[in-house]
Length: 314
Image (tube, rainbow, N blue to C red):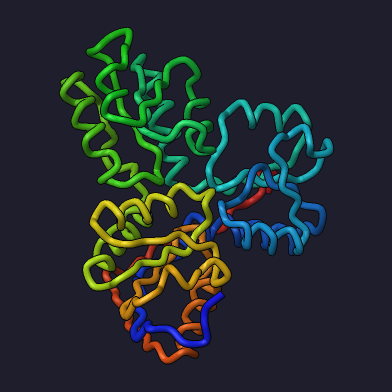
């Protein structure tokens, strides 16, 4: 809990921050479905990695499950923003589930690329984090034809059936910085490497990491509002620390400890792509009440918008 007085004189608030278009689409898609179809509404996996968002949706009637077998036959289910393997669609059909697909369009794009490369008899090297829900779904697009690498060392050691028939794809929630060296190693090893015509990297992931880099230059400490389950939130903190800054990941105001801000005069504040704005406002209000002024650091305007997901049977 914050002390009644702090040394913080200024909060530098990054923009853009918080919800990206894909997350906003997924969350509003759940609310739209609850309004139109009523309760219960099942959601496969966490719609986004933020407990406050999940708790709010649960109160509104969403039921989160990890396995489609937990959904009663014939009920309506939403697939999360992270996407699923084609086998999950088959399982849903077998159980006569009525699916609403809230997969982020950027993830869908990667799935289409992987499917195309596999149909061309290429081995696809996917750059991503093992165990991440998005990665699980992408690996399932072409089982046996997609190999996962997460480091330069793994890229240097990977073996493929035909070095002349290799393609690359990336987890969308990585950044250009995350993938640059790995992609360079893959291109060194496989000169004929096929890559997408446009970048797979999520625009929001890159924008939020770029903002963190700027915050480090003008702040004594950077607070990133985000969940520990969120890949992009953790990476934002890592980026700040790699640039020599002090940075902390906080779920909400309740996680801001006095030691984090001890002696701090200029505080940088931002939020991951899965964090709602009200969590940021709560922190701003607390510091403003203690005399801090807010300065907006606007780096880029985001105008990306995705239409709400619709039910497959509509």
